[in-house]
Length: 292
Image 1 (cartoon, rainbow, N blue to C red):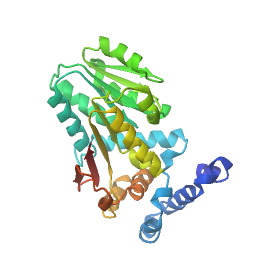
Image 2: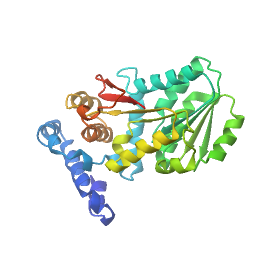
Image 3: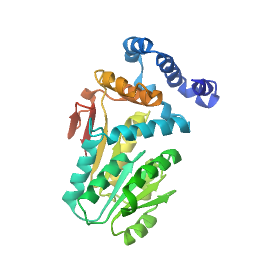
Image 4: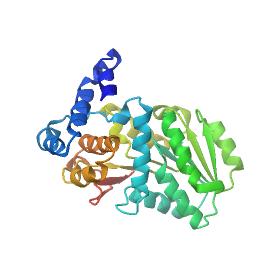
């Protein structure tokens, strides 16, 4: 609460006052269950999701760490299988291609999807060289991703690069005989200028797109992904008031995670607006998978 009030009084955040105020109201509501239920019933539906920010959108390391570590814990659970649809589709694509591949995860966060995919490849003793690239500008999530990927052991090489270039990537690819993960902090919106068209075999993003506050940025992301990838997958949530109930129960004891879970839901597009040509919906978790 104190940090949010500091942001509210900081002129650098004058354009985010609406989001800050809604976060303060949410923090007040979380102080007791009755107040939280009242917030859900009377305020949540009136919030403009397009102007909303989650706690992890603010530069506070503690919030980022608490959110991502709890999210990784949830993503690892077999039930409800939070990111399983995306991990399964990535595995399916890899096995179908059955050749050396370069994959890129944009807005990679803690890279739990990649960890699950790599774990399955190791279990299957998959023999083709593969490079997984995690693109995320945050040094905090970069550290979290490394900690998460370390669970894979020495069978996977992890390379940390500040800004990945085509030449550096090809140097790594020349010596790669198994599975290599490259963590980099490239600006996602510059990837089209840094890599040739259709360079990456598969590009995907998980629970990322809704963090882009401007529709123009979402359109720009779509354009860049289409330009640099042979195939792409987009995995995110759709707005569902019903799902807020189990999400609130699961996240109640972790205020930062509760904030991220509920505010993400308020930022998602409605299911009716996700009228893509090739999209699957997962009712158990309230997510969709778009294939491009």
